[in-house]
Amino acid sequence: MSDGADEILPPATIGVMGGGQLGRFFVHAAQDLGYRAWVLDPDPDSPAGRVADRHIAAAYDDHSAHDELAGGCAAVTTEFENVPTESLAYLEQRTRVRPGPDAVAPSQDRAREKGFLNDNGFATAPYVAIDDVSRFAEVPAALFPAVLKTAREGYDGKGQVRAGDVTEARQAFESLGSRPCVLEKLVPLSGEMAVVLARDAHGSVETFAAVQTVHVGGILARASLGDAEPQLSSQARATASRIAEALGYVGVLAVEFFVVDGELLVNELAPRPHNSGHLTLDAHSVSQFEYQVRTLCGLPLVPAVAHGDAVMVNLLGDLWFTAEGEREPAWPELLAMPELHLHLYGKATPRHGRKMGHFTLVGASAAVLHQRADEAFALLAARVSPEGGGSPVLPSTAAT
Image (cartoon, rainbow, N blue to C red; front, top):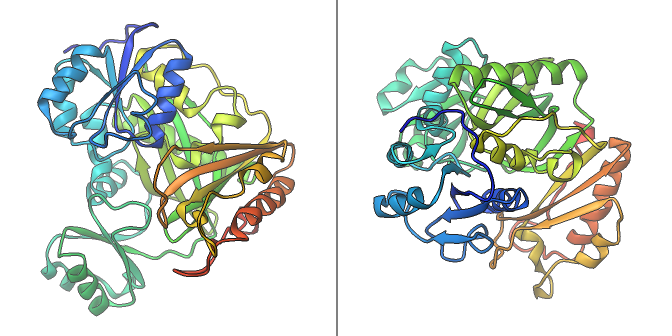
């Protein structure tokens, strides 16, 4: 089906593949603009499905469900990168799909993603693609220490094992089921950054300012607007825009960077809105999710104006497990902070490491906001049971 740049206007129906919190925010953004929004997700109680105008509870590779979605939606997007590209290609023959399968495919495989980046002149950490145990004979000693990452479907630190030498790397490969992997050198980080952008079908791009990020156990703990060094932020935004152009990308794209000795290395791509961009909901005139609706429907891309500095903190399921048993965290105490915006994702069951929500603080000073974020998080973590790994830790982005 031809995918022109024609506008799709409210009250049209648009759809999203994926029912997690990213899909939930997309549905809200679509409905705020007057659209009806459908969700396809196999979980009958998915966070996005619960707020959508219609929820198709089906597998992502179910063609009959695709026919139903395409039959009711003028355009379809995705909320996570592992929707099968075959499903997107099938949908693309029946309705508008943004981003398209060719743009999504590189990010579904780490080896392919890094190859695409290097082939197009974007620097990454040194790596070797490992698809068979025999490949370890070709790994140079200088690559260690390293981290072995599964090529597909790893996220939030899952499917990753550190290795100090080639023997440990072989053992890690076996522990991961001898699946195709990427063996990546552990580079000496001085920080991490992320850029979220929107690119339309005409090639116009709007980028949010780079945010500084800190991860704990491979999961984003904190993201801040106002801490990134201006020159690096500009460089990151320009690099992210060039990556989107090289992909022929239409939609919202996130690019994560390592900062090493003042230089940027591309870490990962996310062909969708991103956890680091959640602060745009409260800190900008246009959020990443509104941009997702605009790029999908061919609406104008207006610049996103920041209301001030901002700090976003992830809230994991660990916070629900207190010494007294499982219970809701102290939301009223947080909500007494006037600069704090709380977002809970509507997930019924908390689990350790599961993203249950986030809060964002917006103000004139990133340093003050970090202090207030520490105070807010301490209110929640004070009662957490030390069983199963201790109380949650929230490192300060400002200190890295």
